[in-house]
Amino acid sequence: MTSLQFNQLLPLKPLFDFLRRHSARQAHEFQKAYVSTIRWHYETAFRRYVRGLEKLRLRGIEKHEPIGVVSLGTEEALGELRTMGEFDVRGPS
Image 1 (cartoon, rainbow, N blue to C red):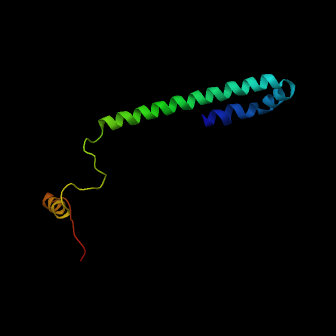
Image 2: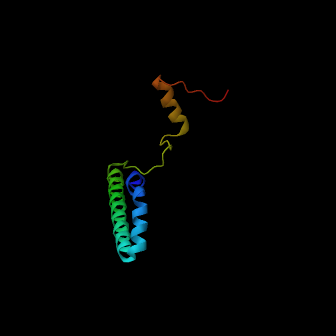
Image 3: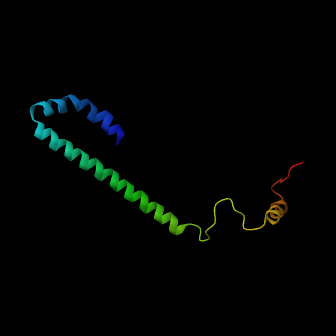
């Protein structure tokens, strides 16, 4: 949307200024149409975004637990990691 505004509408600014000087009512109608179109565009995009978030929430983790919280105790979790063999977990020396 921003590129449309800068690349195609900004060069037409002198034309809009001319329209505003010579026919203020038409310029105002044009401005209202533009604002309602941009509002519709952003509202539609926001609704799609919210629907996407709702879908993610429905597919999300069933268990409500903050990220980073280990359900096992700390020592049990470290023990699990040590037994996996892939990780080198060392505490403070």
